[in-house]
Image (tube, rainbow, N blue to C red; front, side, top):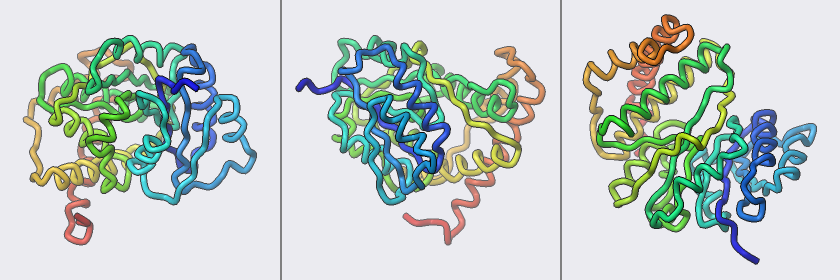
Length: 292
């Protein structure tokens, strides 16, 4: 039996509805079904009471692997252990890939050596939600800053990332000291680059992110990202390295530069996100919070 070209790895925990929507989109991929497999890692979550996830997994031809709660980094590593594909394609459970998603990744990777991966483009699927829109604008800005403006540290999120399985295992996968979402993708990308690897941007490889936020969950999200940034510097063995003031100025002005809808509110939310991020960073550095 021929091994698949791609193993799609989706970590999840207690989000059955978004996961079912994600798997429905995977079932609609145009890429030949025999050339990919789908692995869902249930990270210590409760099963969907109505069986909706299992039904969607069946339609997508997905395997569900359950493990004790260990965090998204560990869940993705478990998916890589279970994978048979030459390439690992990471998705988040609240992201729905476009039908041509894998085709676009495959074009970006065609003829590339074993140390080359590809990161696609994530699009906000909830444009009427100002908090989801602001969070996506932040990611778009960071992609431009780190990947296009030669800031020196590549950054691609695990909601849309493909990497060679052999090389991924070679460098140790995701660092499982990241117990929560935030920072583990940045650390992996940097370690990948320092090991001589490359990650190419594939803007035609699109996934649609449906993360409904209100003010409270928006603040918690960016507080958690701040904790992840602190852990990132701890893992690297370095202190905080603040970005230049121009980084924050351009971030707040970004919605105006790209003419986003509701740009005044979005600019304000981006500023608030950085305050929440700084608070999370400080919180993680409390002596009793240090676990390394």
